Image (tube, rainbow over all chains, first blue to last red; front, top):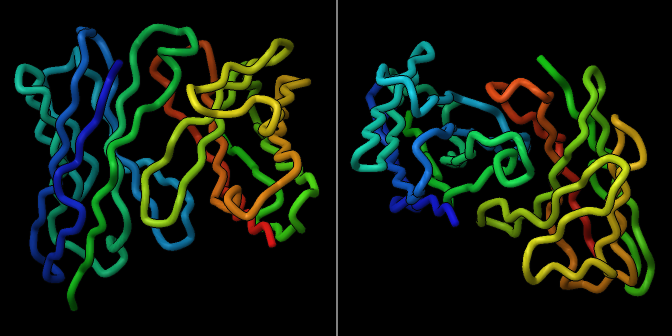
Length: 118
Length: 117
């Protein structure tokens, strides 16, 4: 079974600074997807960024970028120019590639609470 | 993007009663939906996978007779918490993906906060 680990329960960053959230995972598959989701106080899950394992290039979405190290099974999220609105829970998630139930389901890490100081 | 609507957003019920939570895909057909449970300050834990026209697949430790799932159409899955107890109080979230494109993301409902008194 796949597992996702987020080793940082809480992180703090000064507004306008950069912060990196860590995520490691364990899988025997070679093709899969990785995601970072943001959960603000409203608790609505919001997709921040995604990475396909078959792509070597790290995904980037505006101020958000990832460092995907497939051999190390590491998938960290970097938030640049942090804003007050970035404060939330961040969850790393894994999804297999096969189009059956097991491949469709997301496995989540334990989450990291990000606080942004003004 | 695709939208998943969950209703109600919050509900309070008495112990021993049942409560139904709906999850709808508004602009796509979802043959598979997922139900998660989230305790305060914890991650999302998959409860079950809801399959249209067939029985749901429950994760280990989840009582299928207590958490009844019905996926009667391609746009609606329901989770019924039967004979609710205070320990069932939690945040329940559904999600769906627009098949069959393997590259599509999962979309989440707004969640339902259940309080059993």
